[in-house]
Length: 309
Length: 298
Image 1 (cartoon, each protein chain N blue to C red):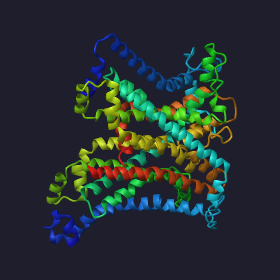
Image 2 (image 1 turned 90 degrees about the horizontal axis):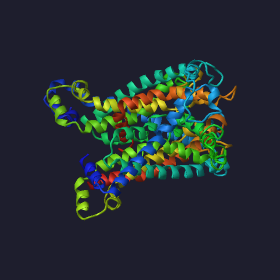
Image 3 (image 1 turned 180 degrees about the vertical axis):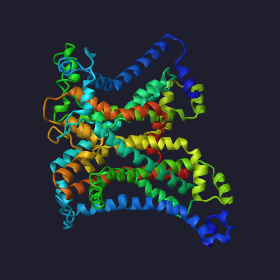
Image 4 (image 1 turned 135 degrees about the horizontal axis):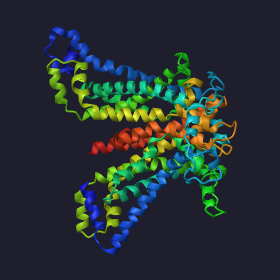
């Protein structure tokens, strides 16, 4: 009873109903309990489970014969893993950079009192509603050298026009960038537009009174205010990049060969089709490490900035 | 809005240079819109062309004799892997997975958000932070244990198994949505009801739920698009008969037997894309709100 009264002052008067009162004070916890149990088991438990698997020699089926960090050593010696990892660096870096430039650019242009702004915004953002599988299927068609953009431009009379990245081992990863930028840059635009609309009008008016030109106002006053938006966008986009699986499967299938593999497809291929569960688990743990490396500094700075306010 | 107008007026001074700049601005925006729209237009055009027009023609050529045959074939006859039943059945599979998963995860998220904000207890923030982590993990890290757990539960390759997976990993997001929404609802409202002796669920049904419509819409749209568009869980945990439409589409497009029917592929892609496109067109505002709330707030 003292516990329940201290936490739910409203029920201090209902001394006669101590059972129901303490039930009431425990109800919130009871309601949350299944969700807490679920995330303990399915998120934290599974992470540990995968880590344990990564320390074993599991192949087709999980076995619990421990081999220390042997799978990580195999991974480090695996050429296909390094292709996947360096592809992620290329894909992630370009994807994030291009999305930021296009997203910020479109947002700034849309912010100039544009007629039909709503329509344009809708058009820029709709790819985000599609699944990466659909995006991959469409772009596979557009980038098919015999039928897509290359064939179209050639039919206009530019016979030597070549755009066959999809079938070039050293270029296929860039086709992933094209499709992913098409899908996600509108979303970055929406983030920037929201950020622009949130900037205090007075600062801009003051700069105008000082005679600053519009480009200068953007560079010196507005863009610095958007730093948190940039931060969030980078965080979300890198998260999308690390998790990218469906797009690769649908657009390039990781090919030609395994030239456009990403860690997510590497993990799936080894864990589910090549009977290398131990190795697949090790690669999954490294992906988790990558996400944490981005997430922890982000959350840290978020929490710190909230404390400052 | 008003600052946008004022910023716009800086450019809008009627000098010829400013007019030219204004024209350029619209030109850039329209070119960008065309670029974003092109893949959808090509997909639609290709899906209503007979095969004979596709190989010789170009992407943007209008169909000379438009036909719905590719759509009919994609829906009911096209081969996805070994079977030739089209994507129609898998389209309904997706709904059979999405609807229960969305309802359950939204309801649980609403109750969680309510308990976390209006009945704070020692450690409730910690519980929230702990659950939030589920939004950020790369799902590759849970694939193998999940496959084994579903097997133990007798849910391997079943629609119920996929519903469970989507509920489990969707709760983190829905809890986040409702928690952030309910933080903004004045505590006084709830406290007054507590004084009157109203209990946990009564307050939820009578006070919180009636004002929750906007966040319910956001949560439903977010979950609907996430689950509809899922491929990873679908491909890892579904069987032949329980595949969602994304998996069937991928199988259809990558089937290597027979002549490639690009128009049927594109029609199947349209079918897989339509439900989320409809949601986006009808409720775009809430879609964007879901995107930003789901990913910006940490």
